[in-house]
Image: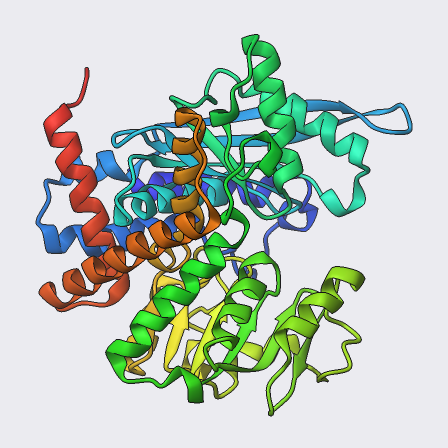
Length: 444
């Protein structure tokens, strides 16, 4: 079953009209790495240690539902353009599906299925009552007006009304989306329901029922897991150096919080370029610069560097906080860090994991490392349903408790099964999902 899904996903990616060069494949062409295929490999590795029945493994692998919509949107010039939108529910065994909506030109069904699956295990690892979901629209939000983005978002929300809702599937921001997009989705769902539904989405503006601390939650979770890992392996953060790939919300927040603990960031990159300063880059000054200029390029507190080489510099901590499949079997041997913290989802492939393990690099897996965002999304959902809101200090305290507890559970799972933190996290997550499936049974 897994092989057929991977083959199907690869076929879709090869034939997609937005990549016409893939319509005719030469013998020398290298097919893109299937992100969902990577997830299936990770599940298989963990499931072997749990000695699960093969049919049960297949059940927990496959998405429960994948929805594809063609979204006609009126553009500012009066013409109509068709956008393709996805929403995947991987699992709802432990609660409503939970996961972001991504606006990006390279969104594929394969990618969205993988991200939804990772959300299933992420929610289970931090032990919150959600399953895994994810959404995406093939578009370039940087080339669209605010009006076009609003019309696209409302059309997407209206077409996905049959799957979205506070009891069934709760979206959140992701790459290319943010609080404003969530506000439009909430309003669209609310108008269809005839009453306000703040719990239908998370990551909303505060005035619409968003949670304090949500914007920084993912980066704060990255910081917490790095801090806990450093303590376990004997790394003094006040003397540590670091590099971050991707200076968006996750990369910038985690860098700022780690800088406050004494970590010196000598390399930083984004899609437009990269920076280097052996004495350390001033993260607050860079953040202020990016807020004004929308890019790190031109920042005077560092020299220009090669963004393709950031991940291979000799630093203590490496934080890939961009997109998937950045460290593969072809380049993993060049990584020189002690701790690799996955701020992004799926930046390291399973084949690369093998190489990093041999190099004795401690990889903090995405389903633990960047779980701070979904944890505070859960807090937001709870606050919406209670109609009572916490202070930022209370949110951060509860996040700290959840993340430290999850880290301890993953570290113990890894030690008990004599495996990596990634497989230890998958074992923990799968065990929690399977326990619920066994108790609930499978309706047929």
